Image (cartoon, rainbow, N blue to C red; front, side, top):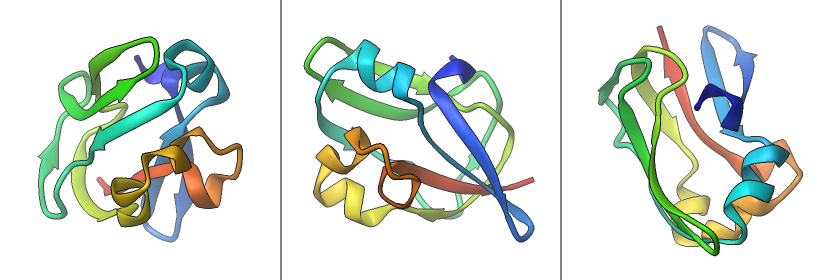
Length: 96
């Protein structure tokens, strides 16, 4: 499911968010259960749960490391994850 995420290096972390392909596949996102800061994630293991117009699913982490930041605005307003702006549709920052 790594194809559903874009990745961008920010200092010593990797910021990840939903790609346009994911947005199209899932439809409008209505709920997102973002990972907690401090949580260790493993590539290929679930780390993000979403409820969307076309799907309800757990998405696997595209890389391993520790969650050091989450987009709390998206937790409060999941529609931000439908945005094309990376400043809005990012999910978390992971430090390897």
